Length: 342
Image (cartoon, rainbow, N blue to C red; front, side, top):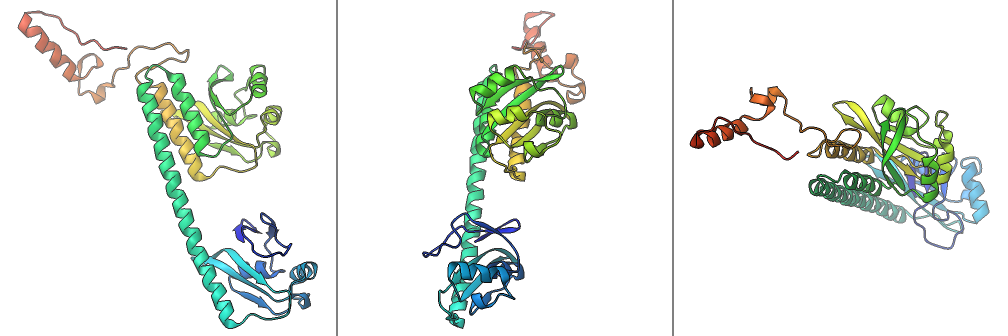
């Protein structure tokens, strides 16, 4: 069994007992043997659990219901904290020997090592996936200089896939409402609904709240949030948990990436950090070589700030002017220019 918050969850079992079907959770208390073993962080051995109504009222009731008697629970301890437990029991009154208890404790220690190794391997795998996805996005940015839409769709899809989200959007404010710049995972009914129900820039949506506060906003359950107003859209799309991460340009929010899950399952800090990375890349893509205004029309080429150019002329690097000077002298010309593609 593994500790999940204030409960224990059955993650593996052996034998024909109907007790503890896989996936079953039970609140952690000291009224049953495994709960006490986890809370006290020590092995608990009971010779006849059915006879221990006063000491283990809940455990004794379970024993009578499922027909077991002798019971042993050993906690799984990692750095002094219980992360789970091994529970074994017998249908007859036959206490476990000291050697048998020591053996179960040894198995518990090995289980902790195996769980930790699996966790580290999973983190390594996730890290490699994130690095690969980030590299893929950067490739798309570099190859799609004048195709911003492809870049944004790749960012949204990668963010959803790597963070275990079912749906994702990238929204940009236009006036008092949001426009969808890219979307992933939403069905036709949701898209049709949103065409006639624009999201206003306000606290009634995760996007609006994120833009107004200029920081990451997570709503664990949209149906339990008193400020959330787009419950009809959430019902159509079928999501519960939603996350909003701002696109920040020099500290000012210019858009929002939102992720949704169909279940109530908040995003982790690592997942939020990853979405923030994608949000930064979205800003880079928008402000990159094909720098555009809000209406999508290419703006004038950006010049470097004067303080970064060491007193250059016209806002262009000194190297450009030196090339012009060299081009002029051999031909006795008095004018030359370096021309860049916008």
